[in-house]
Image (tube, rainbow, N blue to C red; front, top):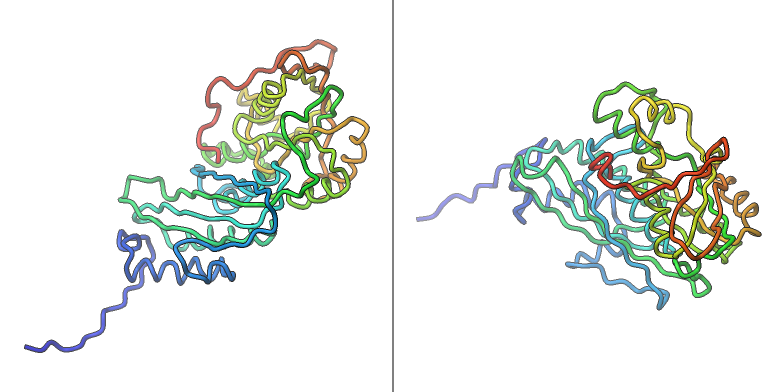
Length: 346
């Protein structure tokens, strides 16, 4: 008995279904209609299970990260550009030039496809601005209730120039400590969106890839000792990690800390310390004090570095601690965050 050769009906979906993760036609359409057009490049177009790359250096930086921020959209960005910027900044902290990135998407059944398209477009824009290519990826769909909309996993690769040596072993007595911008903006923006607290609309996430700042800085001042991005746990946790790893005492000047007035007001209202609030577009930079002013000029010439400040010094390499010098001359120890001040911040 012969059956008529009927075409498979075409359905237009405005939400993610389990079929989008089944590896069949629906998966192919999702990739071809959303991911390929946004991320198109010669490596992705190889259409292999992975990207085959030629890297121009024997010194490679490799990092991975996962993003579960809630809400997915917030003032100043969304989970998409956050994922790109966070991964790029991790590579930059190694002194590397970011080159390639992978992106894995875990989607919840029922997630709006137009929201996914907005997030993917934000990733495309962020990747172009950061000078990195998304060369491979993966998509999975889980049942409704098993994932909060969308999670993204990334991995990034960059190359480290031969004259760059960045690490805890370089931190030395007398090093100046520079922060590249105002602190606490990302955490307060997320909190405001999540809790509908109605803070001023001027409080926006600082999410950004600091590619040009780091590239310009290392081109002129290769004597940078360490770079770190103070994300979860804020400035305090990152400073404590450096102090512990380098066995150094770091003294920070409270009056030198760049804090935007709306962020300070919000933290005062909520009983938060800006030193512990997350950032997503900042770096801490340690380098010899004699280069500090030159470094500051380089950083402040960049759009993302206009509020950069020299905030302290490394005073010795004996006792690992972070000391905050208060406005009236007193001091207090700044400890690492003991709990989770604000979960799912990135």
